[in-house]
Image (cartoon, rainbow, N blue to C red; front, side, top):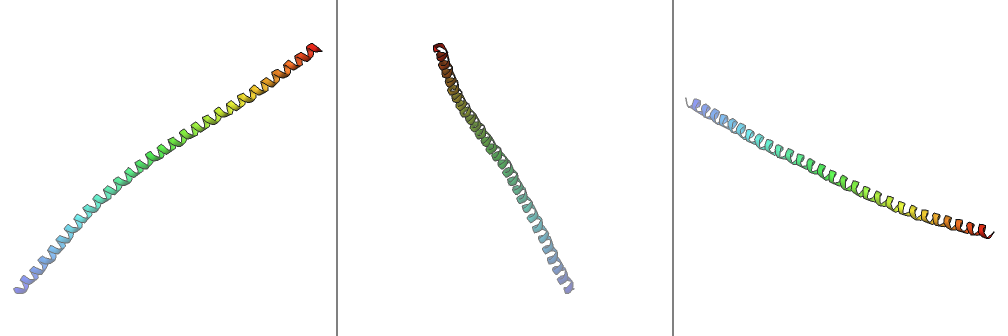
Length: 105
């Protein structure tokens, strides 16, 4: 009979260890699933943040490009206007000179 009590005692201890291991495993699984959710949230926030940053940088680059292009066009137009004024002025001076020669001639 004593061996039977001893055997039941050992089986009870083994059963308690198995239950404790199962409970410990369940707690660990829940903790890790929480950590995974937090990591997934952080990753999604990082993606949204990076996406916003890329949009902001793209907008800045586009604005700089537009401004630079407009400035280059304005400068080119100004230089063409000056050249046109010089050519028109030289042409008018030549016409006046030709008219004077015709009148004298």
